[in-house]
Image (cartoon, rainbow, N blue to C red; front, side, top):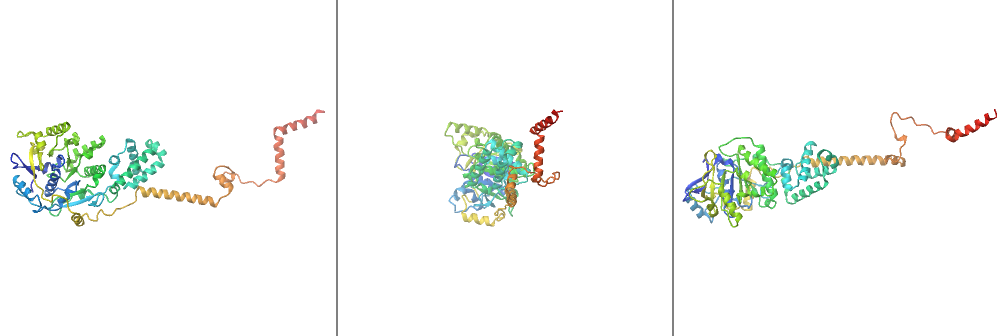
Length: 514
């Protein structure tokens, strides 16, 4: 097994082999170029090379063309003769047609095995990015995640989060004292964004069984790395969902995989196609997270390769981490294009045989300007390289061929059925049902003992000692007779002001004559 992945031929006559060292493949890379310059074929031959070297691959199939990796190329293809001619020109003597072991995945479960994660695993930062929330709305989302942990209410799918947000809204006054202002308007905005996500088909992303990362890092019986292809043609209609899912997957790999240092070859290679979608309008916190992952995931044995139209699509701090570069043609139609082309050329180690800037502008389809890491991680001299032809089929599989591969896959049936265990939605529903049952019972008891006086007492419109059942209350007295009532009334009158005057008048008349 070679220590290099053969990419193509360079030099004056394209006869010098150009390869990507497996030992430095986890130092990340970049494949860039304008539309129609051959990026997809380059991605295809890189995936083939890693698979042949026993390295599992994960990539997204934005146009549907990469499904052909699962089928061998044939001699009756219209490009067979050009392929043979190119292989001879670049000295690719071992070129043969062959298929690669492929596993198809799809967030919507149509063109591949379903792939899911839970809301909790996604986390508030990525979910806020997915929902395009404001800072205040993101704060509410953080409160929801905190309450989920404190109250023991797992957030597995969207209905769990929706139910918990309703509960937060109902208890907003109490929660505001602890977490700050909980605005009903912010909760309503989040609920509307969740509805939009559902309409885009994003509800299928959340739930169980969640994807096991080990299923992406498998080899076949012959030791070839499995190529995991995510169907993304439909997913690209929701670019935010596409970028957030891939970033989540990359973050999970970073958090769960152990440190391996500098392995002889990567444990997994991750291709991030249409990388500009990840950084468009991304908040600084998210860009910082991507930079952290790109900087540190190398030691986990994972190589990350960004595929985009222009290197300027990738922030400079992240671009500086990408050591292996394949630059297809850039078009310079405007002053801004020329400036970007010049900046791209300045990032390469110069070759005295040609101008890098002119080469990037002039290379044809299937040709690229390449620079790979050499011994001790030193960037190689830039070279004009004729990319080798693919061994697998160029173009997509038919629907029947894809279905046949899915049925025969080891993943068939593992993720097909959705599980719905007890989580926040069920817990809150049970609480609501219990509270409703207790309220109904109290109402029923009140109706059974319904009297006018009791209704007034329960409504707090009348107080009566009879309603008090304390042990210190006096025993009820027997109703007084009419005579007793008259006596009490006379005594009361005599002890009053009028009574005292009457007594003084009677006594004065008796003693006046003495």
